[in-house]
Image 1 (tube, rainbow, N blue to C red):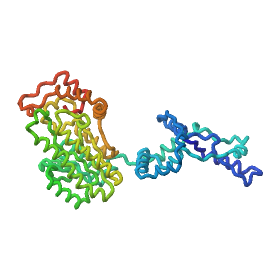
Image 2: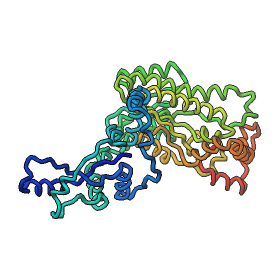
Image 3: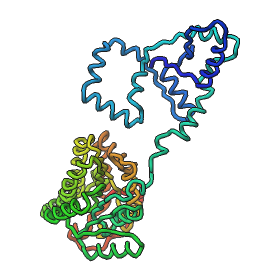
Image 4: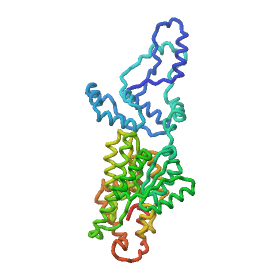
Length: 442
């Protein structure tokens, strides 16, 4: 970048005091600037060293872009798409737009008169290295914007209406418990009214308030009535966690005569979540704020065999959320997808094989939802899930071989295979594979 003038305030004060008392200097002009100004990149690296942060290693001379006429550059940055992308990038980096004006700062200062007046006084601009740490320390203690952001769950949800679907057990129950404890107006729905009553009583015994409604998200009329009630009674919701889901573990070879498995899985995991999201979005748009969190699956990233119905339904909601996030990026509405690994919940209980493999607890899964609410990332995924997605993108054939190995290593359930047999003890290979691939659906 260009050279930029930076001088410490105590130098300015000392120089002003000295020059103001000199004889025969009235009516003169003195620039209190650095005689050897640093380039922008070198200045940033100096502060990086003071902060014990990584330094930029690549050097690119901004003058290389000088061949582009200024009018053309100005016209290009005035285009709406370019301007919005630039604004989004700068916002993510936490930098003000004005900093771009200093990338190739054109102004040059002449401080020869100042140096003449200060000669012999011992007053000079100190090297930035000698005091950068003081500036960094003060900023970190007093001015860092993150100091004033409440990173607690209570700070994000207290007094807000938060809906978690499927809260009668598992991930939903653990999540809504944390939200109620943090002061949210906690609302949950599920199909089983009796189970909801038991959960509400459990919360009341703990001194917590929980609003429950018996709603089957696969039923359009029930969803419509519930959305209408929430909009009228609570003015909509602030945060929606689409957690309710249906999972089917069955190989495709055992599903040729079970097309309804794909239909009912899609009805809950995709259309059910979509009904609620579409129902609550208008109120979020009117308030220009809202957060939709979709509990997806690690299987979407790893393309887990034996879960084609489940993964396809979750992938559909992932794709819809990506499209919606692009449409509502300027409306204050956030979308987060959580590619959840295998969790020990009633949903996986019928698969006895999972009694012998490592899984997350519902509390650990709820902590991922809490992270989503606090930080509002686009996606939350485990390292194994991200690795699986990269493997499928970069080496798809290798990824297929790995997943096919797991498919052949672990059998279908007795019900899925239409063979009512007791699950056999795990082999050494199965134990090793399930430990390495902790959280992946087999």
